[in-house]
Image (cartoon, rainbow, N blue to C red):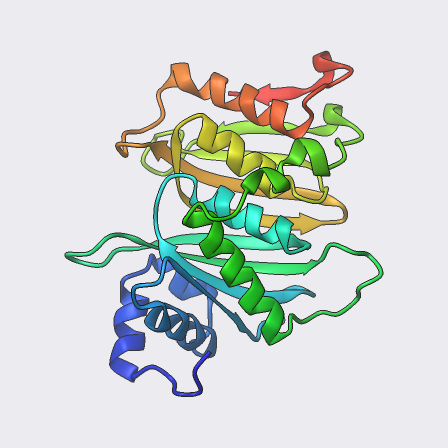
Length: 257
C-alpha cells in the first residue's frame, strides 16, 4: 500500500459508512489501514492490504470490493488458490450514498502448508492474492481449480455438525449459524453453497477454535427480502451437504430450525 495515509476526513467518513459493529471491533489504527485499502482501490474491481492485528495468531488482511452476490465465495476461492486457510473473518457492507455498496471484509489467515509457520504475509503474497481475486472477478481465472470437491478432504464426523437459523432482534431468522469441524477451504464450500441457493450475504463472522469453526452468516434474498420459513430448510440442507457431501450417518446430523 501507499505510504501516504488517508486524510482524517476520509477515515471518519469511511468509518461512519460502516455498521456500528465494525467501529466497535477495530481500533483507530486498523480503521485507518482499512480506509487506505478502500481509498487506493479507486476503480479497480478489488483491493487487498495487510494490517497489524494481534487478535488471533495469523496474518490480518482487508479486502475491499464492490458488494455483489457470491463475493465471499470468490474471495474464498482466491484464498484457496493462493494456499491460504481462514482462521477468522468478518464481513461488512459499506453504504456510500449515490454509489454501489462496498464490501469491507476482514480475514485472519494462515498458510495452508502446515510446514509453513510464518504468521505474516509478504508484500508479494498480498499482491498475488489481490491479482488472483481480480482475475476471478473478471473471469480471467478458472475458479474450478479451487473446487472443494477436487481439493478438500471431507469432514471426519458430520454427526458433530450443527446448522441452524437464529432469531434476530427484529424477530426475523436472518442469521445462519454453523458449527462443525474445521478443514482447509471450508469457508469456500459454505459460501459457494449459499451462492448456489441465491441468497445475499450481508455480513458474516467466522471463528476457528480448537479445530472447530463457529460461523455466522447474515443472509437475505437477492432483493433483500427476509428468508422465508420455506426456504430456510433448503438452505440448511445445502450447507450440510457442502460440509459433508457424502455423510455416512445422516441421522446424526443436526439441522435445527
